[in-house]
Image (cartoon, rainbow, N blue to C red; front, side):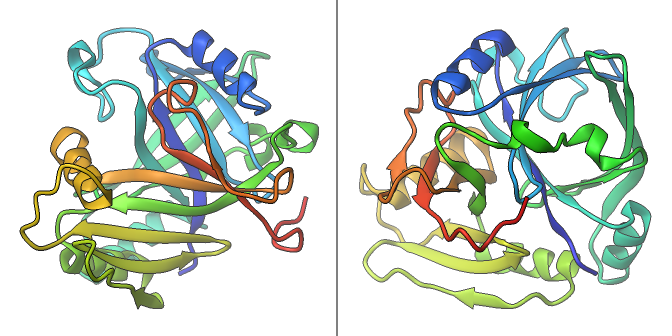
Length: 275
């Protein structure tokens, strides 16, 4: 069953400041509206590959929410990502047949600033290394706007890669195989770096699972960064690379303006994405 990237989620404390900061970084930011439970509101950064980044902030105390950060303990940054299924129910059923538990379908929705009501269904995974599922009931173009809002001054056109920090690479790979149905996997050990990698394909996006290995406790380097991430934020999105055609060299966005999210703009291939 084919699954593609739907969106990435960055949780923030102050949505208005975040909109201003991502605009400064060269993104076109759309106001999304308030979610059906009244707990959160959001803004979106859409790309021509059809995916988007969701900037989300809480409007009230919500300890029952999966992204709630009590007392701002962890802070702003990536908290999740979602895949887009043709059917949430069918995808959950197929995953369960392969021994992987997902809750759902669960009803979701929000009201846009123009009053348009959107509805979708989600599937919630049983472990933090897996994405949630998000499938539209109303037309997807209402949730993910098309046209000029997908064009950005920094040239960003799509999500090239998502790197996930995971505790146990083999265990995470088994779960992804159950979710995606035996995807092609490339293992890429990094000798001398105490890191093991596995790379999967999600349409035009690659997904890299990264796990620190060995017993090295060097205070600097990628393995140390992964360990700190796993200790403070648990498993999940570690870094994201966006394709851009505005620059010929890769550059990392300022983390303060990106609200704790590690985002890199990398040179892209103009034939990869279509409007």
